[in-house]
Structures are given as C-alpha cells and as structure tokens.
Image 1: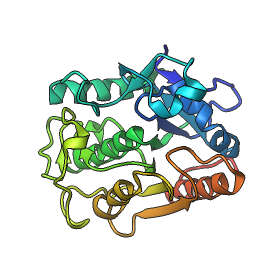
Image 2 (image 1 turned 60 degrees about the vertical axis):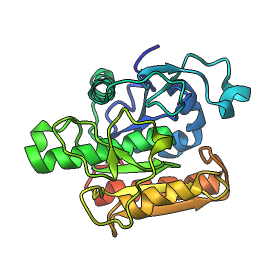
Image 3 (image 1 turned 120 degrees about the horizontal axis):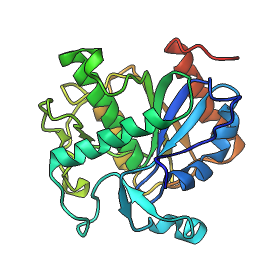
Length: 265
C-alpha cells in the first residue's frame, strides 16, 4: 500500500495541505473514508493528505464491522502487550522517516500548514508538534522535520512522545518504545518543558470512553491561550453530522487564518 492516500485532482494540488494521521489498527484509506464529511467541508480551501502508519497491525475492533475488508491495517506505536518491543530510537526513526516520505511523495504543491490526527494518530500528531517546537528552540528551524503552524487533535491521549534523539525529554514526555497504557506519571499542570505551545484544536466526543484522557492532553500538555475545544455528542469516532462537522471545520479555518495562511477564499 502507498504511503499516502489522497486525491491527486490537479485542481486541488495547489491548496495548503494538512497531514492526517489515522488511529491505531486502521489505515489511511479507512481514515479518508471516516473523514469524508470533513474533506467535503474543507475541499475548496484546504487539501487533506492521509498518511499511513509504518507498522502492520490487527484491525481495531471498532472498525471491523464496517471496514474489515479494507486491510492491511496499521499502527504507529505499541499499545498492546503482545506488540513486539522496539528500541526507542528505532521507533522514533521509523515515525520520522514515514512522515518525511509521506510529505515528500505527495504530489501537492501547497504549503504544509498543519497536522490532524485521530486517537493514536492524534498522539503522534501532538508529539510531532512538540518535537518540532523543541528542535526549533534548540537547533533552529532548519533542523526541524516539520514546520506546521497548528494541530487538530481528535480524541488524543497523553503522554507526548519525543521523536528526536537529540532532545532530553522531561518526565511527562516519554520515548517511542513505551507501551502507552503503562504511563501514569502525568503532570499536575500545563507549566514546564512538556508543554506544547503551537496552537491546537481539540475535538472531544462527550460519550467517548477515553474522554478523561483526552482532557488531560488538553489541560496539562498544552499552553494556556493556545487551545480551542470543540465538544460533540458522540463516541470514539470522527464527527459526520453537518452541525458537528461545521463546528470543527470553522475552527480549523480560524486557525489557518490566524497563522497567516493564504487561503483561496
């Protein structure tokens, strides 16, 4: 399967781009289908590019009934005890290389302006932003893998992950080898080196079993004044009803405009 799954319509290739990361046990093709309402709403202004996770995985149980025939499925990180262990730097390098390859091989010409992720993909999206922020601070913008202006974190869980071995990570940030479910040392506040200062939009389903974990990411890993929250009456999935989709896409467009992105309309 290709590293990206997205439209190559020549009429949209010039649009500003958002890199989109699927959940664990899914893949780019399924995530594009899950995001179809978001894509339609943003189609005249932004181009969503759907990236594949690097590791083959069993499908997530929640998608089997609808998307079970759309394999192979993939994951970004270990989250089950039976997932093979991997060294931290090897895992980080795998994620960096996959990100670089997806961005380099996409046929679009528009500026890369943001990153969007759902569930495990939101954790990676936030971690790429934190890594970008720290690399820029310590080594300069030219050393950063990405230069995203904002992130859209849908049902994302803490902790963040360091994806560059040059960085010393604080206790509230972990390496890419850790089984995420084992982490318990969450910070008490959103003050410290673990905090993400790049603007983020958080999308929370109020009936999502992981809502408390998603709120930890928002409240203790993101700087005050940099976040926007959209809550909707749903579970662990992507919003598809018009009023929910409109709420999300309106805030995405606001973030793009605040960041100075040149939009076609």
